Length: 184
Image (cartoon, rainbow, N blue to C red; front, side):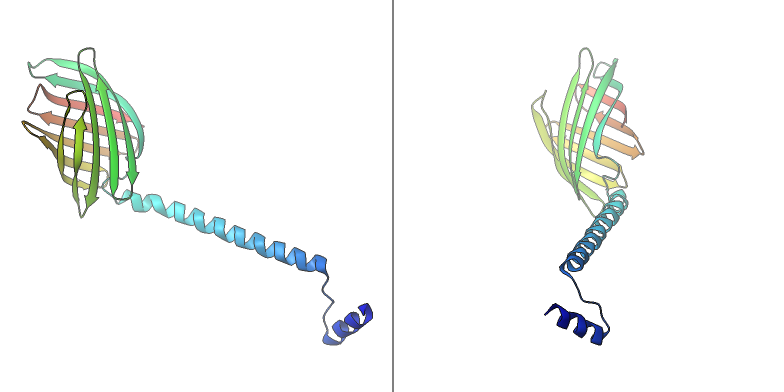
């Protein structure tokens, strides 16, 4: 039987195929498919940041820290240390900002969505037990929003450029303003 296989192969002009060569062809094919899959996922991953850069929350994802000042109702200023964490998922973002001085603390959390240049969502400030809505505009890592609740309103501007972020809050409550500079 083995001679027949060889003679048929010789007649057809082909070498007989052994099980060993079939197995190596299967492995070679599997390696090519695995390489193609890895190349595809790397290309998709490389394309994702450029897509994210076009969003209102571009460059914000991650943990940031830094400091600034808070201006209280009586006009006095205090230095504050801050930490912010942003979790960006597509067109939505969860944010937690905690700032503290010797006498003052801010615990702000927000969930916002960006669509068509508009930013909307909800916020809470846990140390004062208040919360409300957020509305405004956002594009390319910059937000201009108003946070409102019963008896409270604050204008918030946030600008991200590379690993630097500037947050400015202007309010009509026991604190009048906060200027915060963060870095990643």
